[in-house]
Length: 487
Image (cartoon, rainbow, N blue to C red):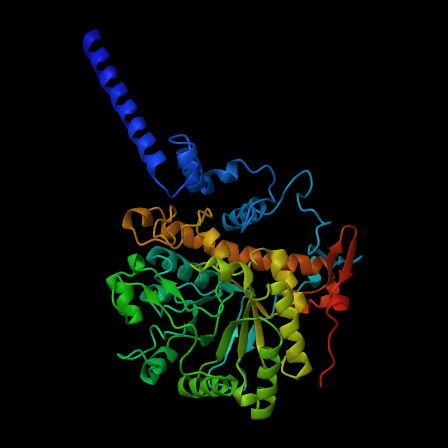
């Protein structure tokens, strides 16, 4: 027995030594990686930790406010509210209110008593301009996430949760799937540049399909651009395009799906307004647009054209996506450096609508890392009517920020079509967390409003919030962005 153990140990040792020698020769002879040439074998640890570090960093960051794109404190807020465990913390905040950009709400000396508080009113979208206006009941809603970018169980859980929380669910540009309808929730159909799910056999816009969809969805959203990749179309890798997804989108299976970088049938603002009016008359549903903002020329020109052509041509809502948005795959150069963050884009867009007398006609939806109640309340102060989030709801489904959304290897089953990995996402459990997150998000926005002396969240204005400029100094938002006078 001892001889057998000795022999096995010797063989194992020789195998290990052989592997080390092989790796040593391979590393010092390859020409791609300097680290491996200078530090053969040991240098491989650098690549191992670089690859695996994203999975372990949550255990080693010393500060809850470190880490991007979402820090641990933010993720924990979402996790707790998704599980209905409340938002209480002890021993003080980890938020540094001296950091420029921090938001501070102006609490009232005599906040609203519970018996004087009112439920947040719903808002009508398209009232007076379409046959079937959309009554939107929730402030926070599910931003566009396509079936394909996210998995079947993820779409099912979001649909069921949205129905329970009375919020809308945006399909994303991948078309309307049966799973979007499973919860009988309010659905907004997004029309991307490739017209997935609303196109004919040649890839062109289908009016017949649009009329069919108008019987199902509550509104349409024409996507001009998104914050993660303005000027570049959607990208879905071929390894995520199953036969079912291909059928819904109207494209070949298992081939990379790259959308045009803009709508080929919309060349300017006038054509955009004509398309909005045509689609609204065709379907009887409200029609809006989604866009990232790079400067003030577009929104100012858009308002000028609406005033010139008439309110019938106005979009019923505009979704403003900040440059920090992005739940899907995008080139890092675009994701990091193109389009304004929501903190600057949103108040400027609202100002343009006020100046043009269009604020009451057009509803504003804000998006771009607005995942907590404080972010949502800020957006309402700035002038938004609703808040959209995609990654917030992904966290409610159990996302751990592994940042592998585009690789079909999501460890939580949210962005993968690998059946084994999808088994980790139990719809019957996760849809409840989706609903909890939406409800508690709305509830805490109202809690902040009551603290500011308001009866409900729709009474927020810019004077109810201050923005930190330098350590120890903040400025009221209505001073930083004064309300303009209508022209």
